[in-house]
Image 1 (cartoon, rainbow, N blue to C red):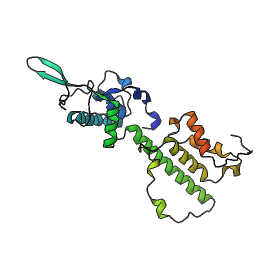
Image 2: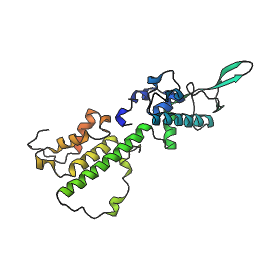
Image 3: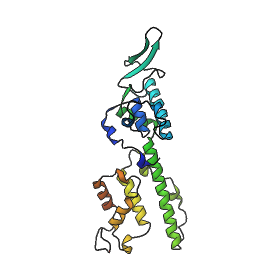
Image 4: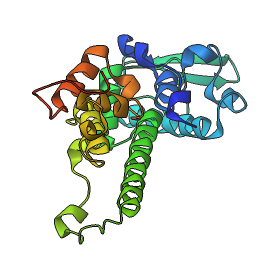
Length: 249
């Protein structure tokens, strides 16, 4: 599964309250609107295996959190059955907590804000966030391979390893870090991709134009607005004096 194959779930941020089932599906990269009326167990042949497994696991984790009180609920329902009355449903009133064995996930409702805060406290990334991190890692590996090939083609010996540079990537480049700005991550990677080959003006290309081309292959490029793209091209351009070039922007 690739990041660009996931459905657009951005509009779900406008829905203040989700059911437990909807939250589990959204976190697994599944659009509940594509499968209205179907329970997660019925999606086994309708979505990729990894997403189905993740949605089942997320639903269980969310349900248990609701039932032990670590994730607050707006309304909770239980499914019961007895010999005299047959099947019946019971609404759980606060401060009581629902029974995890009887919880009706597609009727129990939780606030979006409370759910997101809970996933953050438990460090539970969504399937989309997992793929974003994977793509970013692969992109950095591609840059390293391209750099090595460039140095080898020019018979340039790489500098001795610097212990400081061997440290883990700073947290500001981690998409899962809530303090990491999207534009900063894309700008940094675009600058690295262009600068590793030297000044593009030597080949008749404007720096700003080269930055713009490099950004288009970035895994998070599609998340940028047009204004953000222009800001990144401006801030990453080290040729502030402008001037004529052989290749216009």
